[in-house]
Length: 389
Image (cartoon, rainbow, N blue to C red; front, top):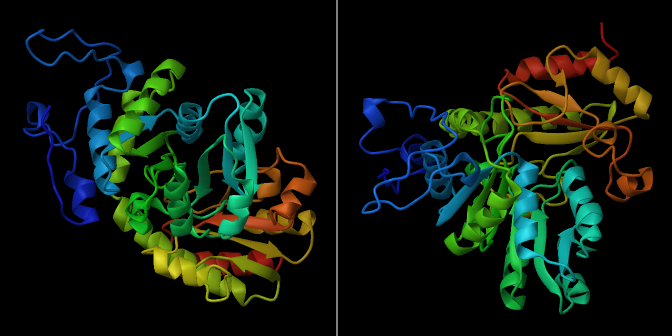
């Protein structure tokens, strides 16, 4: 299957990169190939065996080409979930007796996978600082194989010294892995800054409509092929209909994320001046500890923010109960604003002490700003902070 090859700006790539040429049956939109298996081709032609579990149906292949183009990578791979992408990558680059450096403050699911499941396989993790290469060197051991970070941490919105991480990995022969979900390719493209693998929960911004669960792995061809082989064995392939929905959602990624960037910054500035809010975490604010770094790295500061409400869990829960527009629900990156208390959702599996060490208090609220008018969101937040009405 021939695909379109473009080298234009991101918005053009989102629409045209990877699309089959000529169109299949003349269809403007790629059809759903809802077939588990495909007839084996003529031996004189393409020898590939097509099977859904092998992630190589036409729906998969178009997605792979488009995602690779977005981050200027050689290859990409979609998976059944973001956690499937993370698990497949870590199980590819790590084995029993190996070690991995991990940034403090990772997403709760990633934290559990690394510190519980991988630990049972004899794989050890060393938690290191965001921006101290001396600390990284102190934890470096002969068995260290990789370094795992997030572009923007969930839910405290910290930004590590990402270029230093990539350089450190090149110097010491480590695989550099970054979860780029919060930024999306619109705001940050990790491979341009030296990372080996960029991961996404495609459930979030890449799809953008809160109707599928999916993941993505983007990077060099050899490394992505190794991950694919592991994924083939794990069986965490993405269903063709989910591929179709992800493919559809990607085409509006640019306009969605830029609007969410703008809306989140407006909301963050409002909250930072509200007397009922003790702290706002948003890298676009000048008082954010990582603002200078984010300003130099990112094309936008993202649609995610978190903030601490004066008081404990009960006050935070009361605030959530008074909201009318944001939906109180986990996940993020959709067209609708979502809001949640991480101590009760994404990081509920951690102990209070572990959450406290990461800066996640019972009064911390995380908000994914959608596409609603920012002034409407601000008015709703204002009335909820005042106790409703």
